[in-house]
Amino acid sequence: MAHHHSHASPSEHHDGNARRLLLAFSVTALFMVVEVIGGLVSGSLALLADAGHMLTDAAALLFALLAVRFARRPPSAQRTFGWLRLTTLAAFVNALALVAITFMIVWEAIVRFYHPQPVAGVTMLGIAIAGLVANIVSFWILHRGSEEKNLNVRAAALHVLGDLLGSVGAIVAALVILWTGWTPVDPILSVLVSCLVLRSAWTLLKESVNELLEGAPVSLDIAALRRHLRRDIPEVRDVHHVHVWTVGEKSVMTLHVQVIPPHDHDALLERIQHFLIHHYEISHVTIQMEYRPCSGPECDLNTLPSGHAHHHHH
Image (cartoon, rainbow, N blue to C red; front, side):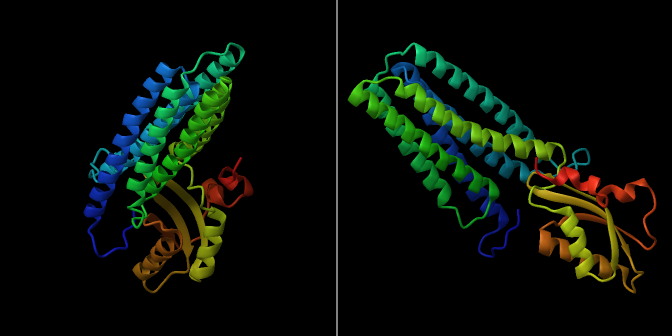
């Protein structure tokens, strides 16, 4: 996490982030429980679906909180990256759980569509409105810290914003039931809310699997990076053996560069490092400099078309 501010130390930022995240997490988790109870009492599936959505939020906030916490844990000789991967693993497990919850809700919705259940509209409305208020409060708590460009806090704020839609859906269903008494609107809206949950679950699953498989950051084009580096630094003849992966938001990179033997080895190394930080925000990089052309099967790792096929989206 890069800090370009002078007015507060990184640890103060961390504490501010952690405080905001903890507060938003508490509000969301509390109302998730309220919605589950409300959904069971009123017989509303839309409320349960919204509670499922709040669970995605609470989880997102919790991971953000853990990431802020674990980022401060020093790495050890045993775990040279510290505990940063733990949040990725947790995100993966969370995504799987969300997919399961979504399918359960959709299944129940289909059953209810054929056998409508009574729904207590007033209870449902009250709890849906309370849930909406809780989401607005969480969003406000997180958004106050928007000058701090922390990816986790931003992602969590987005989650809460998506959840607003879920609560609005539950409110609409409750109003329709109160006005017309047509209960199938409840399972219909619960399916719509589940689609929102599934969307965030899918994103989470994709990103966490990419990180766990040591995939390159999605935004990074390795072929372009190689061309760019050769163009910017004339001494660089060839770039091969490029590996980029992500550990807890930080990109880590290793690469081999074949260079024209420089007068000042360290200065050239510094220029390459500066290029990677400046253009690609990769600060954790290991560079092996070579004067002879690469020979051996690994040289083709990033040069053949088949070599970077796994960086394309499927």
